[in-house]
Image (cartoon, rainbow, N blue to C red):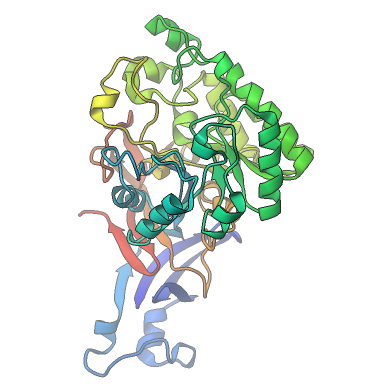
Length: 444
């Protein structure tokens, strides 16, 4: 058994905030209350039977205690957009190292993207990912692709892959251009009651990806990714979602126009969700000039007006998810010229710190509003038993010090492609507990 003592519990699923102890047995929370250790030692009636002492070691041997004085206890974070590169690209990351990065960042549940090699468009690859995920200590879920080989031509057997464990569908990394196929896919996910997530970049408006068409592309003397690439497909897919009633997720939103399109679509109804990444609400295209390929990503970093529009979308609920888009790459790949290097940065280990620093400390969101977008909202979209703290609920908890400053320098990930290396952030994870077990503990 595990007792978390003297924590400040914050549960965005029901808005509860209070000082309390949390008692965990096996993989569930069995009691939330005050002075639970005293109740155990004094044999209180409502605590009877919780502790199964064998008469040899007694209470101290049976019970692990974490003193959480000064720490916030929140539901384990849930990421709906991670790349663990396994199978096929394990020199960048694998399921084990990705899970370690997630645990260090306070995440107990991750939903993986399907753009592996082979892609998760078949039962065998899906089973490989899920089975390997079970050995990591955290909850590893995965999407399957929408189309075979992510070619945008033939839909995968969605019903079969859902039955075998896929929690949703996405061709993330590649836009789906065939409108008829998009509509068919939305109708199918509506039937299955799962989300479909879209990478919204029309290649017709992109000369070189990962760099905004504007100041950044001009600095490098290249053509870039015009904002219209995102606006075009977001507008199309929102209309189809409203028509079909499908649950859709507009991934890693980057432009003020797309934020407004989502805002207006939500007012019309439908089951519409949108993600913001920490890099899109923290950085602008100036970072691509400063950090080079370490700040190259799809969609690219945009202008300050876009960054602020993303923040406004988070504030008013237009954007209801914060997702990392954790995208590891090797140093050799990122050392290539700007037009050749792959897009993407690490995200799992810095997401909470960046969110607290950029959103809470800056006065844009309350801590509870932030946690909602990191826990219960993503869990609810995927119908996961996660993202909340309650008796008889999952023992998935992050304990963090909201006031502690820390410097980004060492990564649990296999890669280190991140522009935030050397940054000082506020809010450090001290413990990550998943299924009742400590899967990460801060050093010192």
